[in-house]
Length: 197
Image (cartoon, rainbow, N blue to C red; front, side, top):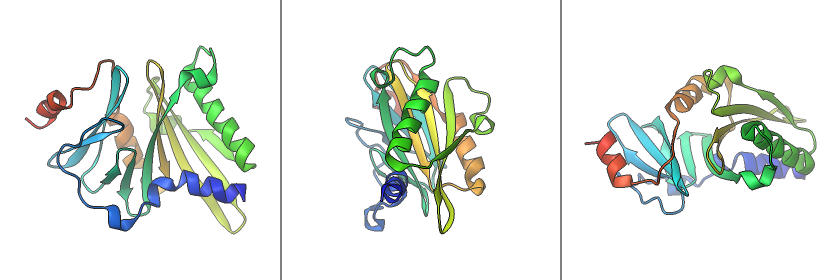
């Protein structure tokens, strides 16, 4: 039962109703989650939290669903969450502490869970960690998800992508290369002028 629950939670971003896939307007408000600006060849995402925000790019084929979910391609979703650093104590390395906090939660609630560091996808960056999480299944290879943790001032911005396969690695690398944290409040109109003047 718990494994099935984990499967549903990790795959939540790709289980969004097909009927909710209408293309959003060029600029969406970002009051409670990410906003997207449609460019000629991609979507530029802006995800605010307090006095900072993360900017990132996904392909034009991606379909933003709402402020926290993106259908990257049919059957592959991305979910955005934020983990406050209060959740994982006074550890010096917030990204490592967040990774352990997340993995401990899933082990406690789902039982068997395999994970490994995916430095090969991180592109040598020290401001983020990529973790591969595999939930073994008795009737197949299991569900694989990537958890990308990006350090912010007050916690970790988390991009969860599932169910992912090796064929998705190039897309994940491009997403990671596009991620940047800005330590200022998001001014969506100003950012829109920068990326789509």
